Length: 454
Image (cartoon, rainbow, N blue to C red; front, top):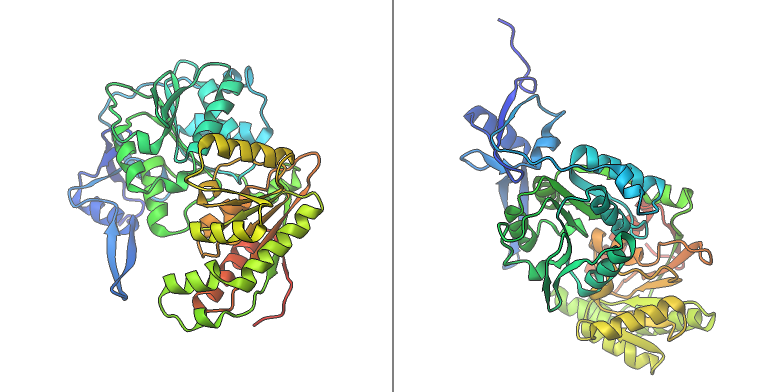
């Protein structure tokens, strides 16, 4: 008898919908369960905890997005037990109404061929335009574009109406109007009923948020075949990777930052790392919140460096965005600038935010703007000359998204300056600075260390 390799033994999968798939064989559940699993870690009362999470349930259920991920890794005996609606999509229909770039056409071709998956492109390359192209390629389909902030909601709605030339539905920010193509805020879609507003296409903006409970709950209700996630940064952690893949599918198109610079679509990012003096009050703390408060938010020398560098750039006619995490940090900096900077945060009205963004982009108002995390993602300011990362932190996704505000290239701008800090006041902060520097270098941004340090 000839023994077959375990990987070549067909795995029986019954796809029950575009959301769920079923493994009827116990042996297949064990094989795939081991492959689709990760260790989840957390701290409870400062004690490290961990448990193994398997993406295949004991009864054999898993998200259908894993099917294309498993193809090529296993031989699949796949059958479908539901009636699949054929969504007609063609590039030519999109090209008739939208002027696109070659890489956007490449991405659209993959979307039409595969119908589900994640598109990874750096900020500044026109992911909203690509979303409009998806809608335009399927003129008879009903589509929903999902975002998570008011600024992205308004920006996407306006851009879709300009590109597609038709009224766009809106669900969010006090609106509840569905049309064939709708922009919706995730917070306003919790009561979504599929039977009331059936969909053929769903597009998730900033898809690295898809593993969050709100997105997961919604995507379990949306039974459409075309399920696309757009992001500038795919989730590097195992939990984020597996949940994103299960809900949407694997990454099907990846356009790198280096390629964007080489092809002339993105600005070259130059990063300056400055080193503030050590704050000894922060050095003596053990709790991270207190370390952050004293070593970042209230650090006088660090804040003076921020004001000095931003003022110097503004004096040269350059626009500067200063990104903070804590609202109190923004208030401290706003006071230090003595009226020279605007501060936008969650309490700033949508009208005022749009006004500040327009003036900053046109360089007709104040050249310095302080922003809370509401502008970390999705906000389009093409002419932005410099970004000061005042917030610290260690998240790879947040670090890349913050810098993304200034990556778009214009006729007047070929590079963007990023100013960050090598924080030495505490081991936590030093480690986070080192991790951000590593992310910048891996992305191909040119890092300049302006101080000698260990």
